[in-house]
Image (cartoon, rainbow, N blue to C red):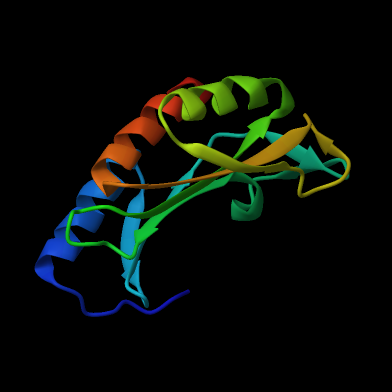
Length: 139
């Protein structure tokens, strides 16, 4: 995994708060980038085999390029069941977050999974709160 880097105490605190709001583990990696991971409770099979791989069930969030006004490039990604796609897209969009990709990663998974990616230039705390509100229904 990426090595931790030395950053200002302000950035470190902001990253910890970002991760706390999203309910995940935060770390600062080279960039500096605040990177947060959170496991979902997806119960899936791929090719008929049960999987709990982070490649399937990990949500990822980040922010970087923090400017003087407190805004940053903020990114998010998660897998959802196919029947949850429209609700998540609507939730993100109504909160001012741009959906950038909807696609699959695997073949022959059950139930069908789709991966959603989103982005915004905004205060990372605001992004974390809006993201949390948007994904809350996923459990």
